[in-house]
Amino acid sequence: MPTAGARTKFSSGARFGTGGTRWCWRANSASCRRPAAARPPWCVKGCCEASLRRLGVDVIDLYYLHRVDPNVPIEDSVGAMAELVREGKVRFLGLSEAGPATLRRACSTHPIAALQSEYSLWTREPERTVFTACRELGIGFVAFSPLGRGFFGGAVRDTSQLASNDVRKQLPRFEGDNFKRNLELYERLDAIARTKACTTAQLALAWMLAKGEDIVPIPGTKRRRYLEENVEATTLSFTSKDVAALDEMFPIGVASGTRYPPASMRLLETEQTA
Image 1: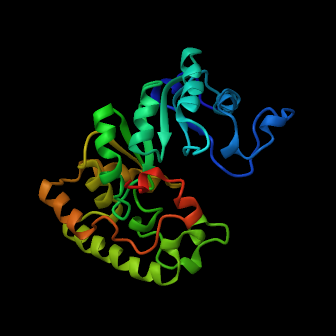
Image 2: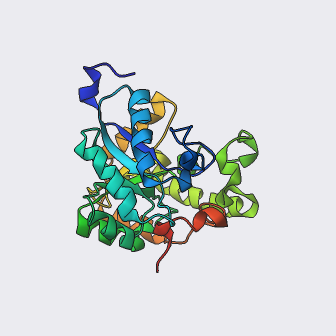
Image 3: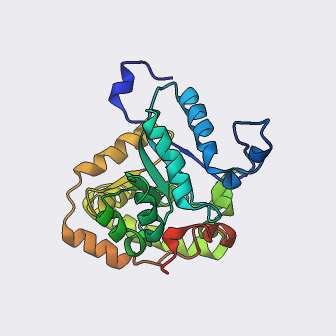
């Protein structure tokens, strides 16, 4: 739990609405005894209050709706979130994996500060689906899994070594022949990283940072050493020619396999071009 002094040194972010079998905060309410993806919009208040307690803070800087529920008008969900801003419990609102039309409808209800979606050298679809809308609307883009779930950091060379509960075992890009073909992508990046005397992770992050000041990668790590290495990507000399070279080497659709299985892919508006 953060101390009062430490609270001024960082910004907090939290999310709600992830699908699955977790239940809403009002356990005695029949309308809330349902999977998270099917909860009514007003459940956001209880979810936020639970996050505030867990984080030990009075206000969350950025609060996300994690995935868009196709059965609930986005205006209803964002309207409920906007109440949290008016109550002083949340400062800014964000969405996850929302498409251009949803972003525009959401912004008509309340300003959206950030869109969080997967973006990396092998997941460049947001460039053609949401970047334009984000920039028109003044929405920052928060890129999760900027290293392809560790792939471009060289952390995964043999999927048989992954723990049995590792989510990557369920992802098409890490399965069988797909993974074998994708290893060629890592080799391409490694060859360039060697010429720049940096790690593959630093190169992948430098490429992303060069894509625009409105793009913020959030690589995850459990070790301080990797955290420090990732930060050093900001000091890497990276020219427009370097960006173009990697763009050509890793075009949209270059990866073998989709990000998720088919059922999950249908919920990702950032993967839909129409």
